[in-house]
Image (cartoon, rainbow, N blue to C red):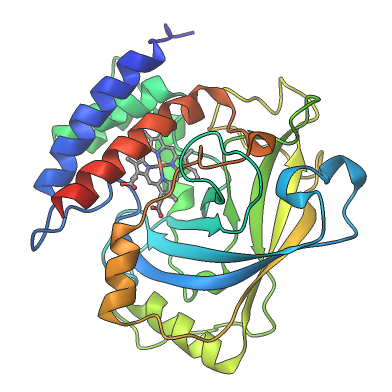
Length: 316
Ligand code: HEM
């Protein structure tokens, strides 16, 4: 076991490096996000909580059947060019949410998901090592450092990066766990699963913005739909909270659908919408206590996301 670094120390060093890295990566005076910098689209959506969900999951926003207005940001993890292999991001903010939040603005609930069920690093200490390597422009050194090898991380990155025709057909996972309910000890991960009637079977206008093009084409044909589902932690050894690189086995603990997300046709490929999308931000702690982020990885994210977003939106 590697030594744990205090959270404050991790946060301070991460923020310092993330500011330096994103400043160098700025283009046309716009500082990008440290992660998921390429905005594919920000879309308005409806998040409808089902009425037939198991009683134990009826917590927080899932407590009663209700429709929440939502905004979703779809993004590429690294590449500006949509036609390249990459990992994708799905960040959703619900509004009209009732009750006090753990951090941020009253009335909103965020969920942040990636297109692979595990993160490429296990701990925030490893994430910091990766950030240090990225600062030196030597990412490969993080994976292949003979004194601190990260071969599992390399394998996850290899598996997670994929070519996609449309992000409306891609599945996403929270990868890290959350509490469900203010009392009791229910711990869950989330997944968003595509369930549209229409499917994109080839690249639409292949090229740099093909994923944005695919969204437009899909929405012209039919609404896009996803199921929102929760997976319960059954065993703390095989489904750990503190190792973000472990996939919780779905054959042992299947996901249960609790809500449906519907995206109707809308005009989103315009400068105003894309600029608003660039300037918006999400945070796992923008959340009701009933969906509290768990684990040290999430602990670190609270201030890192807040500071990174403040830095880039202020400078921009
Ligand atoms: C210690 C761990 C992590 C650190 C330090 C970190 C850092 C960051 C930072 C600095 C941003 C940009 C925030 C902004 O400028 O608004 C970001 C965005 C993002 N991260 Fe993480 N991250 C971590 C873990 C994770 C995990 C576990 C996931 C799994 C889903 C994730 C998924 C995302 C996504 C999807 C975005 C884009 C959010 C948006 O659309 O604005 N990250 N991350």
